[in-house]
Structures are given as C-alpha cells and as structure tokens.
Image 1: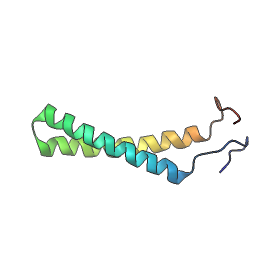
Image 2 (image 1 turned 180 degrees about the vertical axis):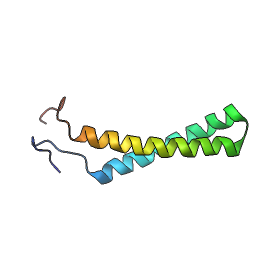
Image 3 (image 1 turned 90 degrees about the horizontal axis):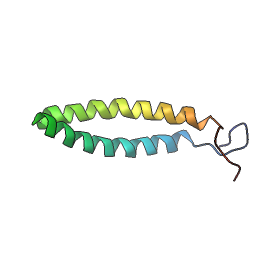
Length: 76
C-alpha cells in the first residue's frame, strides 16, 4: 500500500501483528511486575491483562496515525 506521496505504508494487518507481539511481551513483563508488586498471581495477572488491553489499543491507534505521516521519510 502506498501513501499519497508514493511511500510504502504499513498494512493494518502488519500493524496488528506487530502490536500483538508487543502486547505479548508486555503481558509477560507486567505479570511479573504485578506479581512482585502485589505478591498475588491473580492480582498481578489482572493488572497485566488490563495494562496489555489498554496498551494494545493505544499502540495500534498510534501506529496507524504515524503510518499516514510522511514527515521524516526518505525515498528509498
């Protein structure tokens, strides 16, 4: 897919795959942090799931906005 200026744009599928992998990494890290902070697997896990869901949605929105901005791109 190309932007109006002829540069390659990232597809929505690629954005979601990248976001999903990033969210998985974040989920694991937050589960450990939540467990260490609370001493509870249930509470730590719940914190991680909520954080991951919020982060995933925000990441996709952020990436899709930046995919449409041509600033800082070079012709390749």
